[in-house]
Length: 404
Image 1 (cartoon, rainbow, N blue to C red):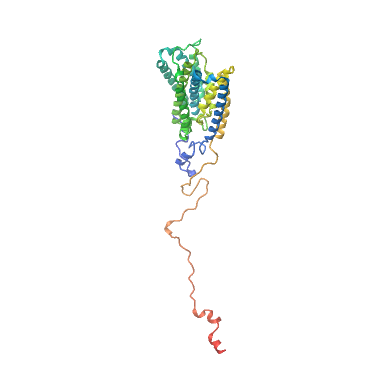
Image 2: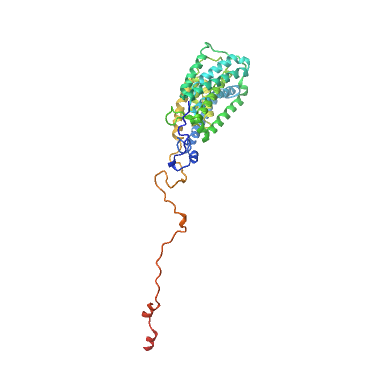
């Protein structure tokens, strides 16, 4: 089946008078996008609010129990943040490509169960097969989405159901058999996650990369294909998203001293998507912030620790649902205030045959054959008769004066 590249094989309309190369630099999407560049200021403003919330919750946690942010407890908190951060990156990447992957939660639980069962074989022996299976599963999901051109949420929900069937084969929690302790490298793992999150946000703020990643976003009829490039980028994003979810599950299982419960994992999906939206990623795709994922993950992780210190029983469903609600408000905010300003398109002087898009015609230049231009012919001056000079008639005559 061929991909419809609606409008992508055409340059600018001839009546516009603007070259296609100029439009490609002015329009966010040269064929169907809005004129101008997205405003990143709304994302920075939202991230300032997230930073303020993180600072406030961290201060409350420190007041409640200073030991919760020290030594071993701090390392455990950082690993939990990295695990949730990988899930948020997985959900956020699929959201940016307008193909949300709702299977990230079940994939994480399945990977955690696999690690719990095979961890005694060593980290490479248990990690490698899980990552390989996740990549193959992500590729199958990607092919279903881009070949059939169906919504990512629907295809991934079907994939999540298949993963839940695998999880339900276990009737009891599984104790972790491996002895890998990620808390010893908590600082390095968190620094690596922070670097990936921030660098990904910075690259996503570049107009060309943002346009490439979000090319799968519908522009008119959502059932119309967006071209081969959009299909390849979306497929790669779904594969990476699935692998990140598997890594997150194994890391969370290694960090938790308790057994891994064979749950559906959909609560982790709600939490991951909620954190991604809370970070400022648009539910429609393409748009997103720079530091939002890092700040949102930190805010949710610290809040969960603070809630446990206060004795509040809040499941992933509660926290994820609240994050989803606030995240949907953030989506409306960035879609309303983050779009290009109206009327900011500056058109260069058109180079055409004298006709511009408004229908008016410019005056045609004169031919250079008659240069310099011919001046109007003036009438020849009439000769002056010296004997008709008035001074011979009106002026005083000397001989008349002498006679007097």
